[in-house]
Amino acid sequence: MESSGRAGVMAVVVVSSSVVLVAFQIHKRLVSDFMKKVQLEPGGVNDSKPKKKVRFAAGVVREQ
Image (tube, rainbow, N blue to C red; front, side):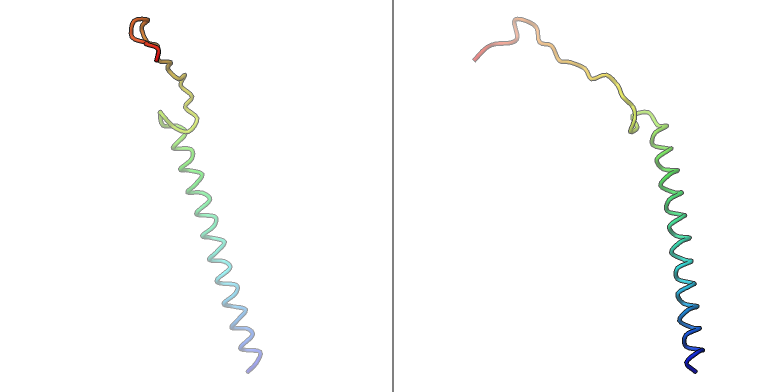
């Protein structure tokens, strides 16, 4: 009786750990695909456009 209980617990541990590992691998692949997609889109993470500087005409700027 006791050995069948241990076998049942071991089976539950094996199945649940396998499910966790498969879920982790799927999550890792989805995140990787998403990051590739974001980097390829314009305006993505690594899109380094030069920043525009604002310049005012000489007559517009007034001192306080």
